[in-house]
Amino acid sequence: MFSYNIIFFFVFLLSLPYLLVKAVSSKRFRYKFFDRINPKPIKQNDYILIHLASLGEAKAFLNIKETVESIFKKKLLFSVTSNIGYDYLKSQGLEVFLAPLDFNFLYKRLFKQNLPHLAIFFETEIWPSYINYLKKHNTRVILINARMSDKSYKFYLRFKVFYETISKFDVIIAKSQKDKEKFDKFNNNVKLCDNIKYALRKKVFDNDFLHFIKMDNKKIFVFASLHKQELEFLQKAINEVLSLGYRVIIAPRYMEDLPLFEKFLKGIAVEYSMLSKLSDIKDCVLVDRFGILEALYSISSMVFVGGSLSAKLKGHNPIEPAVYNNFVFCGRFMDSFAQEVEFLKRSGCLVQIHNFDNLKSYILEYEKSNFCNLERKTQEIITCYKNILSKLIQV
Figure 1 (cartoon, rainbow, N blue to C red):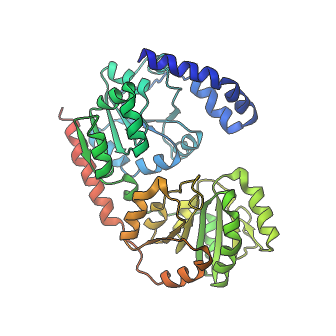
Figure 2 (cartoon, rainbow, N blue to C red):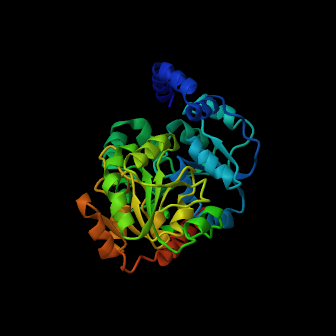
Figure 3 (tube, rainbow, N blue to C red):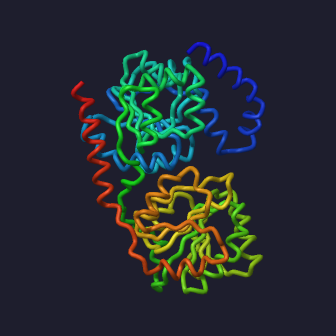
C-alpha cells in the first residue's frame, strides 16, 4: 500500500496544475476538489458506510436502501466521488460527504473519531487505500452490484495492489454471471444477484410542470440525456416525432450545454417552451432543470436514451424509463449498459436504432407494443440481497 500511495501522490503532483486551473475555472469542479483534499472528520458513530460514484449509482442503491436498513438497523452514511451524486443524496435528506482522494493519511483524518460498522462499496468503486484502511481497522467491507469489464479484468490481474484489494472484500455480490466469473479469480466469496438497477420502483410525482405538460392529453416522447454531439440526429428526429402528434421533451445531459440546444431549436424553427416557464406550453419542451428525468418518465410513453449515438459516449441507463412502462429507443453505442440493453430487448421493451432515417417507422411499429413490467424482477433482486446480507449479521 505504501508504494501505491507514493505512485498516486506523484500522479497527483503531475496533475496538480491542471486541477488548479479547473478548480478556478469551474465552480462544479472547485466544489468537489477542495472537499476531497481536506475532509472533515466523521462524527457519526455506529453506522453503515455506503460508497458510491455518482447520480446513477446513488439512485440504484436507493432501490435496496430499505432492505439494508431493515437488516442492520443502523444509520446509513453515504460517501460519493462526484458533487452531482452529493447534491442528489442531500436532496433526498440523506447524510453524505465527498470521498477524499485515495491517500491513506486522508482516511486517517476522515475516520479519526469513528469507523463504520460495515462499509458497502458499489459496482466498480475499488479504491485500494480506502478499502485497505477500513480492513486494517477491522471494518467489514463488501462490494455490491459488482461489475468488471474485460479491460479492467486484465488491468487488475497485472497490478498486485488491486488484486489484493479485491481479495479483501468479505463478500462480493456480482450483477451478472460473467462478472461473477471474473471476480472469482480474485475472491473466494463471490455471490450472484441480478442488477440492482433492475429493481427500480415507481414513484409518484406531483411536480407542477407535469400537470402543464399533460394538460391536453398529448402522448409524450422524451429525448433523454442528449449530448451536444447528438444534435445532428435530433434535427430530423424531432420533426418526425412531432408529426405523429407527440409532445416532445428534450433533456440535455449537461445544463451548461443548454444554450447550444436553444440555438439549435431556433435554427430549425421549432417553437419550444422552457420547462421552468410553462405558462404558454408548446409541443416541444426544453428541460432546463437537473434531476427531474424520472418524473418526466412517469408521464411519457416513449423515450430515446441519449449518449448512444457516439462510440465515445457509451450510453446512459435505459432501465429507469422502462420501469415507468415506456418503450425505449437507443443508438448503437450502449457499451456501458450492454447487459441492461440485452435484458430489455428480451423483455420486449427496447430496440436499438441503426438507421436513424427510420425513427418514425420504429415509433409506429412499437407504440402499440406490450411494454415491459419489471415488478417481478424487482422482488427477485430484493429477496436475493436480503438473503445474502442477512447472513452477515450472523457472523
